Length: 232
Image (cartoon, rainbow, N blue to C red):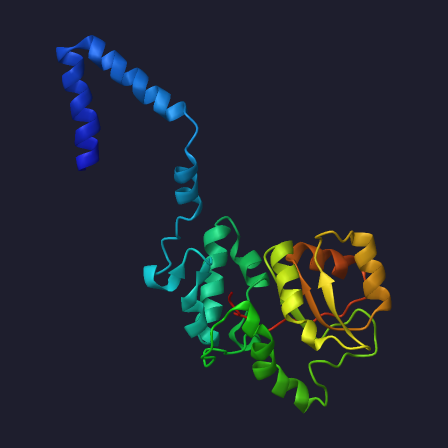
């Protein structure tokens, strides 16, 4: 039996035997505490509680970033994604897990990046890792294919505000012929987004998962996966 169990169970038994009124008062107080709404500080602590499988030194609660990701090679990242998928979707069958599994060969190893993984460094990050790959194909990051709505690079963000920040950071890749596309729902209706992708050439698309899925289901895009593991 733990110390907490000794304290709760033991104290209540003694109070009940020696002073029933005291026990009743204690019980009422405990009941009131259980039904009272949590304080803002308690709610914040609960919200920022770190997962059990994340190292203390690697997790930055203020930025919401796990810096350990920056040191993972392709195999470690593939394993990490599989573990996180299993944790947040524990009822998923082996067949379903296999269908969404991201293999090692689909992940570019960026563990050699020695600069900060913050928003301002994203253009340099893309240029460093994607630039040479695009050059081999005869295209720069600023270039876009002729077909409308077909970005060569997708940057996926967790929310609309984050996607907007990343779009601003990448505006240096915008040209007269190609745009850095906003593929997220913040102030942009789905119909407007579909119309834009059908008529505009784009080199890089920045969006949120659900909006990108909606566009894939309703538009002519032939999207390709973005570079992984940029934090900040």
